[in-house]
Length: 137
Image (cartoon, rainbow, N blue to C red; front, side):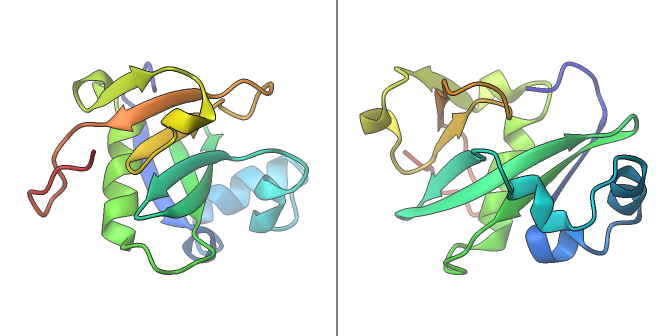
């Protein structure tokens, strides 16, 4: 979903607190805590193994920083990072298929994405291979 070839960094809410680039972005924009990115807005969502992982994209001039929040702590971090990295890469269409935008389509391996705007989510099904060679459908 990124038109340019910016760096894509995917990190957990906890790891985001240690990002120097994100720190400077927050300082410049009057944001006091990383969790503030999830306050007062509906985050985008990724579903894996029955768990819903919330995420937001923070766009800086140098990169897109994707911060995810997995409050179940049951989902493999590498899987989350792999899918979100592919989703925000310029060739995301090679690994994702657009579904009908109804919640019944939000199944395993799907992303509900509205990019922090409005109330309408697009549903995208991950169709690519994971690093472990298993397909998510």
